[in-house]
Amino acid sequence: MRTVFAILLGLAWANSSVATELELKGNFVQGGLVWGTTTPGATVTFEGRPVRVSPNGRFLIGFSRDAAPQSAVTVQFADGQTKYRKLDIARREYQIQRINGLPPKMVTPPKAVYDRIRAENRIIAQARTRDTAQDLFESGWVWPAIGRISGVYGSQRVLNGKPRRPHYGIDIAAPTGTPVVSPADAIVAMIHHDMYYTGGTIILDHGHGLTSAMLHMDRIDVREGDRVRKGEKIGTVGASGRATGPHLDWRINLFKARLDPAFLVPAMPTTKR
Ligand SMILES: [Zn+2]
Image 1 (tube, rainbow, N blue to C red):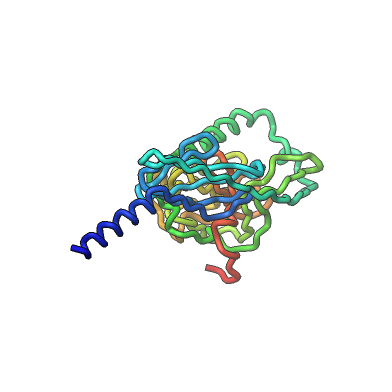
Image 2: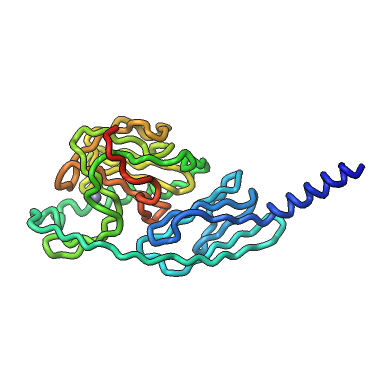
């Protein structure tokens, strides 16, 4: 009898201690991704919007390149209790990358292609609205290509002396034909063989609004809707679109927020795949 009572007491204890669970791990810095764990059934709100929570209580939040120094997460638990967690987001200094001597049409596109660029931007934006109820991002992460890092997240580009949009990807310089693999489990959300800026382009959906974009591909070996595993080959490095040489530009988005892919992987391996 006493044992049964002790067990019941133990269960009650366990229940009350998990009822308001909130754990956040990751990079509390501009461009960083944070992995949250909460009690299944809880509702998470970040920056005024509800965030998808998986059946086991996992969720993602991210901070854009120019995120404000303070943010917050609110969690409402099934029993009505609420937790409010203030977040401090570290500021970063971004590189300024000057590239001179580019052909003028690479710096400012000709008017004739404006409609094409707008249409392609819409396709990309659409693929980044997916909020798939699968936590494929839990697979772990690998570099999608092995090579020299020739461009980093957040750098401000000045092309022929004209300031342009910041660079949001990691550029991995590698010869044309170098394998590109999926950095994590994913569903192929979008493929396009010839976009104006990004050439052969793949968008991978890792679930909960987390997507990868692979730009300037030479070959694309997957189709829209394919399910791919972490490390599975999806194509090859190229120089398609407006690229100055063969490289993979890998980008990470959490919906519209552009995050730094470098936070998801260890240091670049020194040996080829
Ligand atoms: Zn790039």
